[in-house]
Image 1 (cartoon, rainbow, N blue to C red):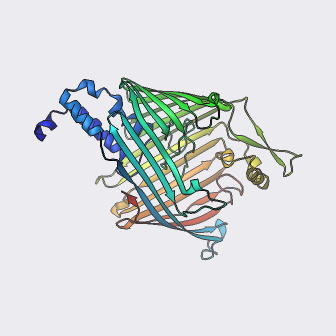
Image 2: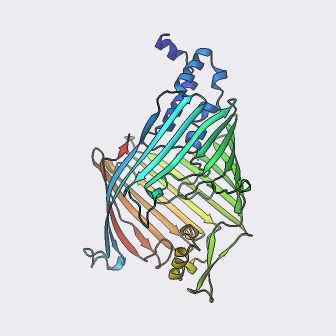
Image 3: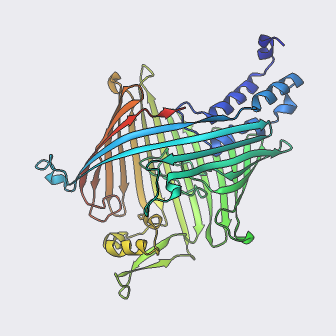
Length: 457
């Protein structure tokens, strides 16, 4: 068959769907994405839409050919950088001690991320992703999982082109927040507000997707933390598209883990993207700290399993493109109400030795005291190609209003030449020593990072 006739015979919708699948696997920036929206949502329209029944036989053969491959796609990302840091523990004394920082550091970061994507037939896809990071050895503080780690390993399959499954270790982001996402009830790791676009680890799960027109219904079976059948968690989520907005609602239940429900909403108006989340849970999975006159170091732990907790967040992102379209400004800001936080987190800051002893003894984890306050904001301003100079600038600000500690970090970055970039950041912390965002009090740091030969392949 003539190639030009073949191209004219394919509906534009089919071409767009096939293109979307390709982009979902290999993003333009080289980052491999596999969350609900990029792989099991929009890109899985390859499998969830009734392509075979809606096109003629010749087009069916074309779709089958493009959705299958005898070859396995292999790719990844390589990263190497040098970081140098200088810290002054007293901002007021910096003018007199500018050449005498209280601490200096130098470190090397070396890592790679490898993935494979196999599509032996149109109804089966197998995907895996592995990371390896330097130093490539283990010791008392670094185990084998820190060196080599399986990020994802799953397969996609379906029943009668109607229900679509993903089984295995997979990322799954329920939330829509950028810096904070209390509605993301399934991810193992939380968002780092200072690196919000970093990939987060997901659990081993079986996910089933039932498309209903443009809407979606998801069911999850979660055996990750189960030792017996009754310990397998279950979750349900629905996605509803209403006009220019998308609303999702979901819930999760697992024995010995606080049950929770969530709702999210996203929409846009003009140059603004708006998002919001709400969560309610019965009990908390956290362990709390309280002062105790009878405890060895003055603090003890306790649980809160029979209370109702609420969390909510809302925010926006604003994009402004300058005249040349090569330069743009992006502002993203978000507020978080964290009902599981301490109304008075000074119990942690005033008892740092006792809290450290509880963590060392295994009675408390670092996650138990993360986001210890109840009210937070985070804001990021980014300006690409400032004044046409080729330099990118930005400012990140995060504030904990429960203890009034804060962190602000102006930054600059530029590409010196191909595959070599230089970035400079000057984080400043403000608050009392021991507070969440100012553990050392009012400090100033200068962080220099040189990225060498990093990129996707």
